Image (tube, rainbow, N blue to C red; front, side, top):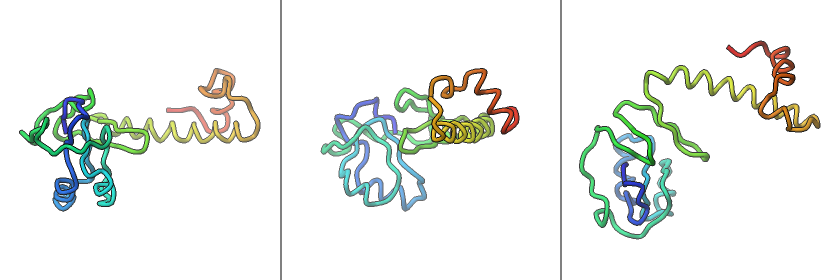
Length: 147
């Protein structure tokens, strides 16, 4: 939901989030605020926002269109884009890049797990994270080159 990065009014509240969930929405992303914050959390639908705000929808944000290109949090979002969010934040992936992004993310997770093992074994982080040439060679010797 494009709320023009303005958290001073709610983009949605518990009633709208409940309706969205019933319509099959997998999550809500807004660059504005959310009303009924605790009630929205209890609904169980992932919601990403700038935080709670008590004002009702319509004070600053008016629903206007759906399935159009918007800007949300400074990112361009187009219909069909893949939205992925977790506790670290939200990313927007154009469909043509999904396979490449997934491959890179999985490879990075494997590399990060290996680095974590090295740190747990007592190795210092300097040069290990991110991998310098020496550590990269050790990593690739154990796991094979990153493709």
